[in-house]
Image (cartoon, rainbow, N blue to C red; front, side):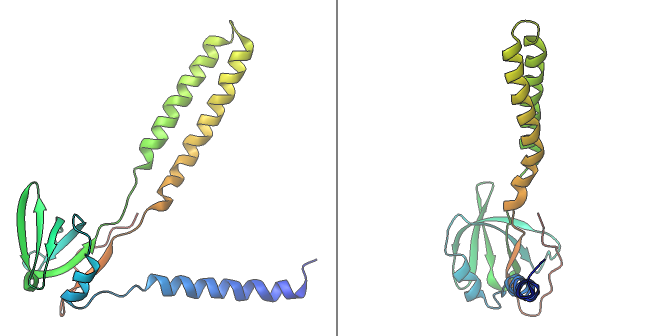
Length: 173
């Protein structure tokens, strides 16, 4: 039987976690160019620039420098200057892992171990048992490798110019 104190504690804990999650998801967006400039303290930071002239296109930008009037980026070895008045939004790129490559590697290793089990069965039974156990372990890891994407982060809006609306969607992992 569950004590009465536990019955009251768990709903309160659930509400606290719910409100904390909502508070974390409402990250403030820099409304000024200076606020966005403070977020880009790291050079060689990769982000997307959305311009007023092309509001539906993301321009990939490796930041070289940021000052009060412009952001200097490189694309394919060429420097590109975006004036602050021409920038509609700055979007920080999220991280997206390609978990299916990890799954394919584990499945290939598991297939090799399975083949080794079949080849070793007539020659060395203890060796076949060992490779069979290894194959089962690798098949389990192939299924679990999809959890690698748990560390992914969505795109984040760093700056939105006053009077502008975001016309590109933020990518989710």
